[in-house]
Image 1 (cartoon, rainbow, N blue to C red):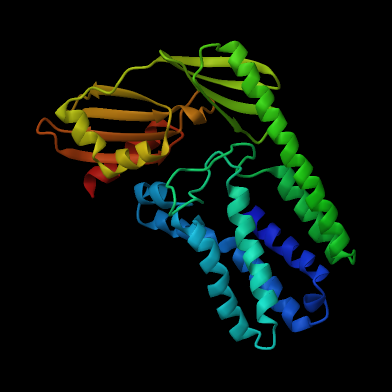
Image 2: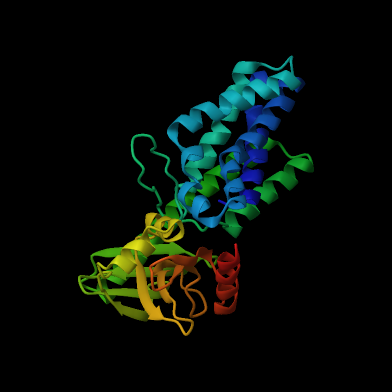
Length: 328
């Protein structure tokens, strides 16, 4: 989920902690727990700072080790140790318990996004991505905001947030049912599909669709159970040439391949004598554009002159990024 949603989830969990008699009957413990749930709801996303290095490092590691099984255990311990130094009279056990729930909830809800997490590390590096909830879901964010406002106006937070979470659980179940319905519709539209990826959008009944058969990739949108296929690409294996091998070893293209299960490629000769290798993730088609790409430019001696991976919504911006990379 996005930062704002994780924040309101941390506040709501802090309000729900008042169901714990130890928290409810000790103001210092409540202040510490509320601090712990807010910090714990944000802590796993500390890896966002990797963007300061470059996109390749960020793509490879975001929602990786900071969302892993050991991290879910270690984050609450570290946060509890620090918060207990500030609120020295707080009950440490209950502070740890609610902070642990905040960290666990952060990682757990991220699994339901299309991006997913490596929550099973170190046992598996597989990305766990159920793809039923958009990274920012206005309904989940909105109901949290309503609950927090009602709490601020004097409503009982235990009742408010208990009802809220029951509604959200029902919402998740509904999203699973809708996703399964869309997948069934895709199977009818593309009977020979071997892989079907259905990802949510900001709109409740609209889903992104990417599918793979033995011979083609398909890209489209689902509006309810109506499937519209916009693009169809013949599956072509990447050429096994020294140029391609060198390009794929570039950190940007390598990071892209570690993240993208369905992509289209293109190799073209540029006017300046360079060769461009471009990879395009087919899962994120938006306004007739594929914004998640990886590009490398190589000279005749197979030296990589510039490369880039990330989200780009216009060709002009991509070329500017590549020019910046070439000048570094």
